[in-house]
Length: 143
Image (cartoon, rainbow, N blue to C red; front, top):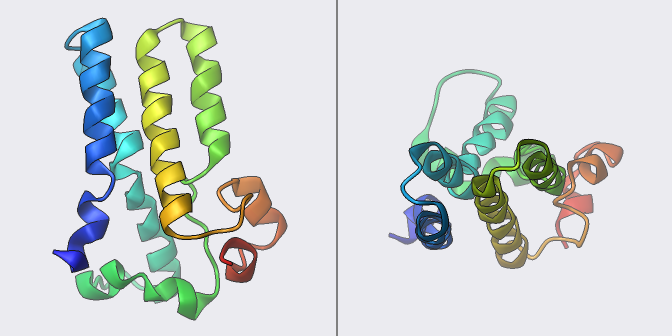
């Protein structure tokens, strides 16, 4: 199970957000799917880093799950792991005035905070602009 932790570590907080969402606005599948995507499935963006590292489409699940490609490439892009995206989601609430967007944003923020704590990263490393300004170099992200 520890090898597949990456698949399940964000699921509990996402499920809590979905239950609270359902309590406040009812069974809205659109927002439920968005909460699941932004709270749990955004780890799909690791594929971006993995494919840049591999420079081919040949996929190796064990290699992907290990995350060693970050240390080898010395770069961390993960474009969906950014507080800027959380800010955009939060601002979207004021534009479309749908309470469900708050829970989508909350799911995303919880994912990022959990990652930032468990990965022991530098304070600004989950800002995409910060990573871009430092050429996505791993030593600016990790302690």
